[in-house]
Length: 353
Image (cartoon, helix red, strand yellow):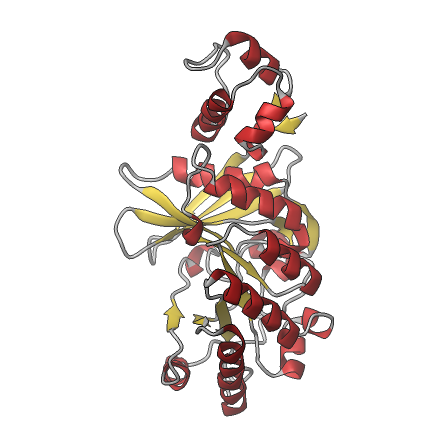
């Protein structure tokens, strides 16, 4: 039986004889609000279709293991256990507007991409997450919000490479955006990837129109990028950007290009010049500016060979690129004291395995 939280209303109608679309929407709403279904038939749903539905679906849920609020900022990291005991980490990210938060969710247990500056890479690939396991992270973070607060957006930037679990990620994106499910505005959903070329093509063809794609650059210099993001050798950055440019032309939604700045590694003048040239080529191909996010590196321990780029260097890079008309933000990556910052998810799990 399939998990109810991974089904859309029309799919539920197709599975349950006699169930009306309005009833399916009511049931979907209930499971995403409460994580389970009542034994008594709910109002607005007929008894016979409801009992047939209950015999055809399951309502599993993740178990909260730990909630770790940062002492430095309003970031909160959560660890959940799946039914098989796998540990999944997610982060609640505050937005500038009070009471609004973003759910940073994982799509895999561990990750097999091997990026040099990512703590999850040390864990290695363990398994894929089912769509309901991705969706339930959002629900559980929402259920633990302060009174009056809400989850405004979802970013697939936690453990794992989303394109390596494409079917489950696409399904969970649709459920996040479904009005009777999690009701997240599509323009507040971002799928972040280091880039797997064939699957990036599939992703951009299947995503709801306003969902944004974020691509981790590492370095605009191919050989240097390959030392940081090994998938560059099989899935070159230039080809990935061609796909994103075509997607931007079709949807008029600019991708987010992210660069985690490593002191003395990818923040030199040659990297900056290559990044500026990359942006210019993208604008020429797409007809619109990408968004560029400069991310402060979070060290992964005493044995980490990398250090963050100095703040003044980061600001200088922002000014160089920004002068060309590209929107550039310095992304604050919080929760470093609890392992919630960018690149840190799964680090504690790797240390304990």
